[in-house]
Image 1 (cartoon, rainbow, N blue to C red):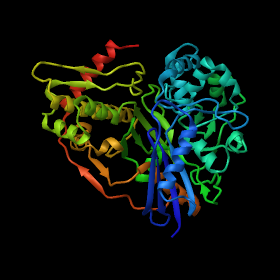
Image 2: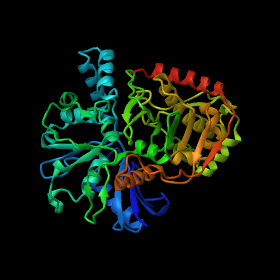
Image 3: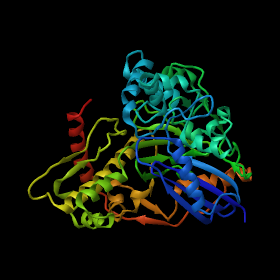
Image 4: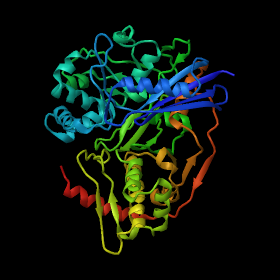
Length: 482
């Protein structure tokens, strides 16, 4: 049996799966936690990968490996391959003002013109999450660190580089930053890579950083090897986490994955590039040579965590409370912007609970309001995809939040679409493993692995609930308009 490995280095943890390259059957797996926060030293990811790999029985017997990772994070390296500062992650909002400055500057002071230009040139309008905004923040607020930086890359790029035997000189590495490599899907989330031309836009990079000499990772093709591990395994180009999940699920046009992790992501595969001057949809690339239009919310599974903590129950208890309440939670509506928001672009917004009365303020209604809010926010993401021409016929509900029985029971009704929950699996890591098998085979297309069994989720459509949520959401927007 020939083995391949897939890695999911997410915000919260590192997951490793080892699979049969021919069939995709899971052989073994492991995981390890990541530290909390929106700025993390990359060494912590490397430590977690080592722990997860050990828990999975090691990787020395694998013929190929690929790494998928959280998108947008900025990793800065100096001439010795040393990390200059903690990596700024996608959920670090300190670069929100920098993003707005970049939009205005490209439009010569006119935001609408600037937004349209950014969407046309890189597929996305800058928000705090994108790497390009973090580079501008670094140049403005930490000029000494910016000056030390000779290369910048993404989290999955850095881990692939380390797997290929490179590293900082202080740890016995060769400091070979010129050996960094990436893939189209993750590069397309930087804000300075054009997925339509498959080229970096160095004018945008210079606009953000003030420099034209930064070294960037080579962008590999979907099945192109970037090197080998010390044990001899081929290393795939890797992918952004959402592109890897789409590859793992085998998504086809008309299907959308809604991933409920730390963030909530609605992503669809597309044969054509998508641009959205409003910025609600990112026109990313996928991991198979196509495109991945995507809408992202900052608040997803943590909405359930907040509710469980507030009500002093575990997640099973939260499900029981939510399902005991009537649809609409007795008139309670939560706008769940606990950590600001990306879709819509409200980085400094806060959450709001609307419609409180003496009669409806119950534990069950509070639980229901949190679950309904989570799903309504994802429905907003699906609406944004439709506005740019994405056809949606079916939703694949994945991520940690999709394990909630209340979410599963309410999803189809709130989203107004057929919803399936794929079988158990680490879909991002599974996609990375499928890419590794593709690289190993050297074939024109990824291996035809079977998709885990799917459960069709049934629920009566409830457009009135969406309308009520939208009315409160829009009221909150007006009050917090920044």
